[in-house]
Image (cartoon, rainbow, N blue to C red; front, side, top):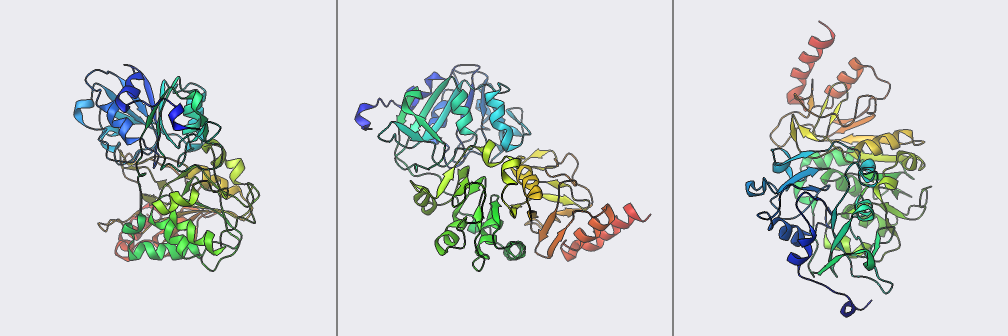
Length: 428
């Protein structure tokens, strides 16, 4: 479709469709339309009680600026760095929800959307724009929103799958040619995380279908899989670490049941190399999150292997992955979707992988979670736990057995104190 046949307007004019009291969806992750969001926030002196909903948003946006207090309320579905201060103040809050169920919030009017602000590729010859790097919950938001404002960017990849919207459905369009936000987890690598990656990789079998969470650990796991065979990808998030294994043939998706031969994902975040790879690549399908993260879909692939991380885990197997005490750090996300899906898969392995201590040397394996900490994965759902000191499967173990096994995965500097607390709890 010829760009000259389309009507593009200025960003400040496009966001004028937002009215006081509206609920506004913001496209997330690498697809965050930063310019449109900033133009919306610039209207703070004329708007009141505008509720913003989103999962992770990237970019230099200060949602927590006190001047927005009366104008914008951040009702986050997954907290990120630029929403964290607002969510942990009177300017916002967090909705605990499985990633797979967020589309229901929009479609069934738990959170009806007045305006969806999205970031798309230019329309193809048939007039269809791609939601690009983030189909996830965005497709449901687009489908249910009363108004749609789109930032159209020639640098947004056109990703195969079901994340397409016709220009006739878009109310306001803004042309903006700019690179996407890039994420490189290599800067977070430590010797402990390197060893965690090796320990997780040792648990992965040939023919496994992998789900990988966000961060340095998943990428390091992938670096240690070069001698594996016939791996597949069915994951909510797709990042750079997968590319060398696809190019070498280690990942060929040949053993999958769901979308055999295809990489299945729901959102994509990484470097420009990744965005170039997924552009118009039929090997990669980006699909809606209520399909990708559906437990019944995940379990259909044999040897479904889920790799996620945590903030802390107590000695009975309760996993806190979303908060530091009462401070909301991130969200439930898709961890439980995949933990449960992998545990029900034939030969599946749900894995929680974490370094034994924080960067400040505080133990991540604790006798009890911090006061107010959220439990994302319950001790009834936990299976494999991995640190740099080894791995253990807690499935079928009683509380004492779990405690002893997890203490052996803790940093040696903390084991004596954990053993004291173990004896106080179980032997006194």
